[in-house]
Each structure stands twice: as structure tokens, then as C-alpha cells.
Image 1 (cartoon, helix red, strand yellow):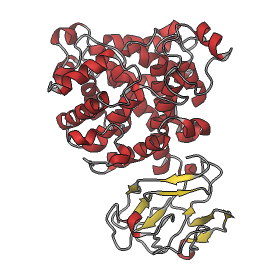
Image 2: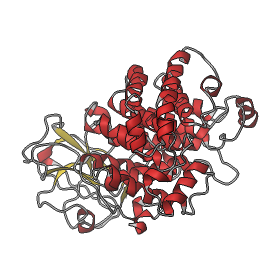
Image 3: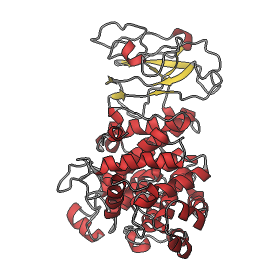
Image 4: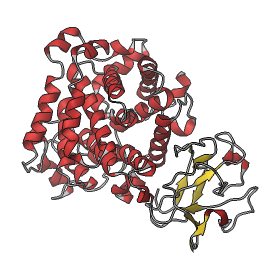
Length: 484
């Protein structure tokens, strides 16, 4: 969020309580408040809509630049873990804690009086006071989406540098340690890995509850829009582009992907499926397998997509990563011949290869965890194919000792597909350790930082609520909604 907290484009049902129509967690459109020095100080607006205002109305009903929130202290069904006090936060300082019933109205300096009561307030301390609850999970959603983009951007300039030695010759003995420019893009620019992940998250927001076929049809439109966008200038993979061209020409999603390609294009964009279906293993396996088929129909490409999504789901559920590889393996074992054929894999390949290559790579991860190296690719392969990309990313995360920076920089400073390794590692590490584990400058300076954070919030809400077929321009960077 940076030093100025931007509260943007999000109105949430964020607490599951008996009186769902009355108790809401609101973020108001279009308000920017330069009031916070510490970006980890999340503004937590626990409010009610006493007049049952429909979503989207609140921002237009109030005079900006206010954070305009109505608090109804007598609301039934207030969850027991809500703190008894909230604090008014003023631009000039921190106010005394007050009971809910006596919140002070705050007017920001240099502004006109609001049309309604306007309060800016937060729970004392940091957002992680509800550790293990809703806010912790939301932080992990944000950490995953922002984290994959950060890792991708760190690995972008080193993607085609052939060795760690060459990386160090160019960027110093420690290699890349922060965002660096490429020949064509400024520091912090991510690649097609993140762009396709954005498209995947958007499809889930729009049709995640609609069943596999509808979801994949929506995803196809998102991919076609991305492929034709001027933003698609980051050296996208050949199989991804081939699949998108086939989809644009009218191919069914089960038939669009390259039959013999097991490149890492499906795995690199699988994180949103892990977030969305973290609580439903059957749905996760099926959706992650299906989304691969749009571009990569080789059984290992499909299995690697499931593996990458399962890793994010496991990390989201617990930051105890000792069970990470076993959980991923359990999901990959469910990628059987029947599923592979059903999502579009050629029957001969489904029978002869199945999930075996992905399972073998998971075995190698566990066998090499005790081995120290400055190049993960020397242990587990160059990561240009799906099973190696997931394996190298898992190794980077598991060797990082709980440190996001270490996880992504190990991937970025590698001799193989460094942006994809760091992207997948960033997604897993971000899901495990949350947004607060990512360096503030990286969160601030990564390309389209506000869009990424907003996307994570809306994806979180979509998983718990209903599909939103039209998200609006703020969340549609590739103009996909023009395609329907």
C-alpha cells in the first residue's frame, strides 16, 4: 500500500456471521488517504449498513475524499473475536481507544464536511491480531497474488541469462537482489507469467461457481484478450500463444492446447486456482487440470498445473510447510488417466505417462533438500518444463527458512527459467507467509501494484460469494469483457 493507504474498489462481505445483511467489512471506492507511515497497518473497517445500501452505492453517496463508513454498534451477531474497541486514526496522530458506541467523527484536513458521518478507524495494532482468522487468510491471498508478481519481476531480467556465473558478472556477487530493468521494460515489470495469472484470477471471479465448462470458456476469453493485448510484449511461450490462437479461432477448450507440450505455462499461472479451491480438493484437481488443457495438453503439463495449485492451497491452509510436498503429491496422485482424457489429453499419452513424471520430480525435491547449491537448476532441471518448474520452486521455498526474500531470489538467480521459478515460489511463499512477509518496496514498486492487490481482495470475496460476470475497467487490464 505504501506510505499512503489507498482504499480502492472493494465492498466486502468479509465476516461470516448470522446477520449477514447487517454486518459488513467495507472498502470504499476511490479514496486515498496519506495517513499511514507503516504499510503493514491495515485499515480495518468493521461496519454495518443500517439502511441496507446495495453494493457500489456507498462511494457515490458521500463526499470524497472521505472514508465514509457507518457503524451500528447495536448490530446482533457480532463475532466473538471482534475487539471491544476500535481506534480513530487521524492524519496527525493516533487517537485514544474508544468503545464502538462513542467513535469520534473525523474530517480530513482541507476538506469539506461530508454528506454523512465519516469515520476513519482501525483495530488497535496490526491486521494479524486475528491470526488464523479471516484477516490472516485475506493477507495470504494478497501475499500470493502480489508475491507471484514480485517473484516474476525479479526473475524477468535473468530469464535468458544462461548461468549463475553470468548473472553475477552482470549484477554483482549477490546477483539480482531487487527489481532490475530489461532491455525493453523498466524495473518491476513482470512477464506473461503474471499476466496469465491475472487472466486466470479474473476468470475465477467471473465464473468460478459456474462449473468447469463455463469456467474454462470464460478463461478462454480472458486468454484470447490477453494474447491480443498490447500488453502482451513479454516473450510469451509458444504453446501459450498457440493455444490462444486456437481458442480465438473457435477451438473448444479441451482441444486448443498443444497435445505434446509440457512446458511450464500452465503451472506458472495456476496459483489463483489454488487460492480459490483451497477448501475443495476435488474441485482444485479438476479445475487446475482443465485450465492447463487450454494451452498444454501433455499429461505432465496438466499434472504440473495441479501440483502448482495444490502447493498454493497447502500453503494457504498452514505456514507449516513440512507437509507441503506430501500434500502436493496427494493431489497429483489424483490426476489419473480418466481425468487426463476428460480434460483433453490424448489417450495414448494419458496411459503411457500419466502423472509419473510429476511424481518423480516431487521425489527429487525431497531427495535434494539437504543439498546446498547456488543454482537450484543444477539439482532439479532448468524449469522450462512443468514438472521442473514446480520442483525448483518448491525447493526454493522449503530452503528459505520462512523468508520470502530468500525464496524468490533463489529462483530469480538461477540458470533456467528464472522468472517462472520465482513466480511459482513467490505464489507459494506469499500464500504461506502473507503480504506482510514481502518487502514494502517490492509491494509498492512491482508493476500494477494496486491492481494486483485489488485483484487478490476481489478473488477472496468471489470465492466466498457469487460470480461477478462484469468486474469493470479497473480490474480488466486486457479488455476481456468486450468479448463477453
